[in-house]
Image (cartoon, rainbow, N blue to C red; front, side, top):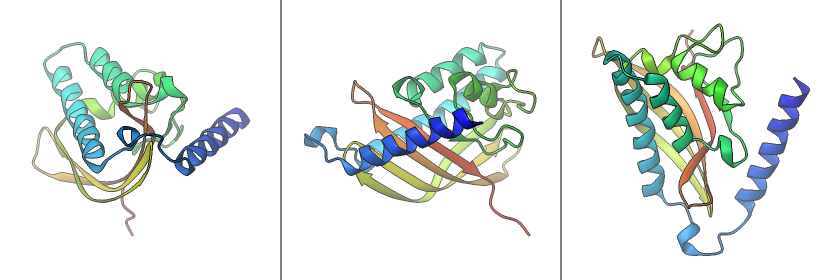
Length: 180
């Protein structure tokens, strides 16, 4: 637990330092259009993993690719608190994220992305931009593949650039809205 806290604290300190820095070139500044494109790629990836599962394809490979392409696990770490995680609320490693999305690695994981979902859409949100980092917070909506009922989920995503200039998620927090 201390290692997790130390790693999380180091990541937060690094993120805060990054957010305080100014971009050296305008090309490095993250834009709203880039964040919206990253959100669409994330939504499409979640739906795609579920469709691959339904088609009896290699959904683990699809989920691995989704994480490798969109998350910053290889770029210094990710603060990931999934929506339906109760026992192990934080997923600090690639393998823990993979388990959450497709199951199999941790006892509580049934595979969020293989539920599956027919649609994921980002709704109302607010964004903060600071050079090479950005944060988006709002609601996203998941429509189950077997119904047209949407489930509203609250999220916060943080974005940084990788060495190739692509956006990566370094913060992902999801929660179901409070209910009385």
